[in-house]
Image 1: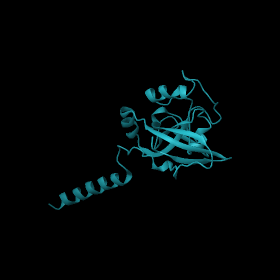
Image 2: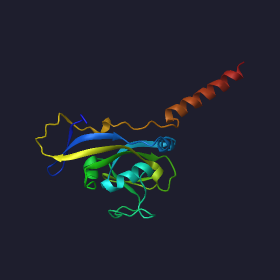
Image 3: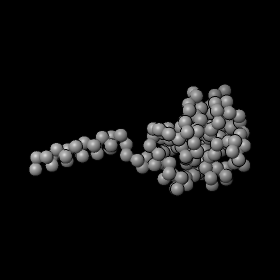
Image 4: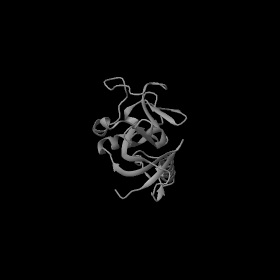
Length: 183
């Protein structure tokens, strides 16, 4: 609990990060990492009452057994934001889940749709809750020593080969074929 960062959101809202909990389910992490695509950081705000369920079962799409809490302005899906400030609007207790989101190369029922700062994830496998960030609403004269940098949160590396690795593998195969022709 020695972490003290500040976060300034619009309209005079100031927050202090008081704690960050690592929240990764290893089985879900391996499944997430096996999906080819680009991994980005996103935030999901929710009430304290939902945290145990999310930690145990992951985020779910509202409607099928999970109530839709804040509407579906951009369609059905798991709503996240690119900044913690937006997620804090949906976190009455000041707890925001930092997630890895996979923008898939193909498939997964529509993938991820972006609407400005909002990302709507259309398949639960594409979002991995990773950290629970505890925010405390404060004043602009907070004694916190540093500004919160969301990019300091680590995303899981992909388990599939990157495009560069695939090109290298192809090059090595072609080089091996050429070498065999001359022997």
